[in-house]
Image: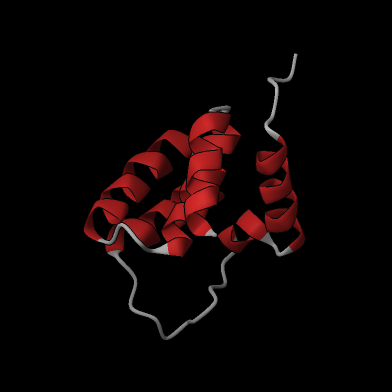
Length: 97
């Protein structure tokens, strides 16, 4: 059974999916010249390998250093969503926006 989803949460997911949301896990990045937190870089690799628990730990470390980074929140939302923790996923997707 799928857990109940708040209407605004569903809207956020639709917007992120339409905009490429977590598709940013591919090998590219929005700005290849951007200096990224090493934990963020390692988390992207973990996500490519579907190692969501590792990615959550790494992204949480990166977020502790830069709590306003939208890209980190977005990937953390993706990792939580793929892990089945929708409440935390929606929290981080909301922070992305």
